[in-house]
Image (spheres, rainbow, N blue to C red):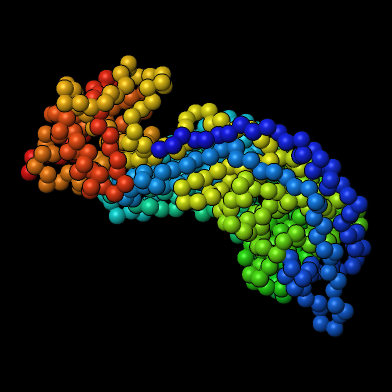
Amino acid sequence: MKKLALPVLLLPLALAACKRGDSEAHRDPASPAPSAAPPPAQTASASPPASSEPGSAPLAAPPPAHIAGTTVALHVVAEDVREVAEIVPWNQLPSDVPRPFYLHPLRDRVLVTSHGTTIYALADGKLTEEDGIPPDRLRLSASTSELPFMASDVDIVSIVGRWPSDVWIRVGGLFSDGARLNNFASALYRKQGDRFVESPLPVAATAWTQGRTLVLSGDQFSLAQPGGADLPRRAAGAKCPVRVQAEAMTALPDGEVLVVGRDCDQSDRLAVERWAPGRADSTVIPLPAWDGKLLRAMVLATERDRYVVARFEAASALARIDVAEAGATAVPLSLPSNRPVTDASLATADGALWILLGEGDGVELFRRNKEGVYTRATFPKGQGLSPTGMAAASADVVYLAGTTSNVRSVILSSRPGKLSFPSEELGAGGPDAGAPTAPDAGTPDAGAASAAPAALSSSCASPFVILFAVSKSAPVDYDYPATRDALSGWTDGSKYRFIEYSHRGQRMLGASAPDAARAEALAARLRERVKGASPAVACFSPAEVLREVKLASAP
């Protein structure tokens, strides 16, 4: 397995020039008067068609998107590359397939996860380790085993709420009963004290005012921690109990709350329900009457800027919410591309809106400044990306995570320089996973002193087969079912001593052989019977044996 390649890149002088180039004489359309109905978004290439009310004049389209001639360069700041040969059957090396980095932008911080339940906070171009989630706290309530199914090798796919006290998470990966049964699952949990209990994810949960966490479940507000504070009151509809059927929600530290969803009083047209700071009652702001089946809606806000991004089956759309003393109105805006919106992030520092469109080879990223000018971001080597999270810090800095192929995952950023993961090298495998190569002799030994493996020869007194590195998340009594199956019925299997051992701080699985010929024979059998396995033979005697593993017996 290759180590993370984290290149250090120089800050391009063009970035500052790019920002200056955005400030051309181009402005957003002015807001309509608060009493006027908002015009719909309608552009030939980048917005869904908008409907007019029966009998009314056609609604005007917003001006076409203005794209600056300058660009913003994205750089690879973290990378994990896997060798295809390391991918082996699911029940032996379930996590030794590429798993992406995930970015989780919360109200007050950005979290990063990958390859397990370790969690990092990203700020000012640096990563700091947060308190992770012990895998044994994540259990499945329903299983076919008499033993509890616990997380064996999982990734944290999404995090919502206020970290670290009021948190909901989605995890995906391998759960195991600690014996012979494994199960792939995607499970949802809520943190309750030091425990994580299975719980559906809310529509939204976010940090609010006075250290409170506001939660929207279905169409009802609550606080993550019960308290006496007044909650926002949902507006009742003439045709339904709650007028705006929530798709997304955000809340600000000053107390403002915004919900976007379908307005049942206006034929399910999208609308924003807004609570001004300190107000318990809301106002409903109609959005342009975009046509088409809604796939996703997002509401993004700071105390100065508010946007709605919507993706429909045929096209995507963008609107700005303008707030004044006389009221709030929605202003439709053009998008810079007709590709579907996949993500968006609003920078608190300066109100820059970063919009991600498309994916794979067709992915595009644009920055929209306060003047309404879009600047295109350029991807390294023209490569595509399947995104797994985006977080904007400012007009100058954005982070974007995803996979570029079935063997490579990356974090890209407009801010050059590597991201160093402080606690461990990402890319460790699962219960049987890991690189089947000899440990690096130049790495300081974290355990007992142990000589580096030497080349195997017929005169070696300690022939040894290095099978693979073992994930830190593997159960202490993991029994390696695929390896066991490969040895089943083999007459010579009982001649080997299989052990787990520690070498330079890494948990490993290997086998002592009676002689060099039998070491080669074991390695050949595993290569033949375990797809993708590539054990290494060596002259080696581990100094720190953790346990003996009974994988083969006399037939």
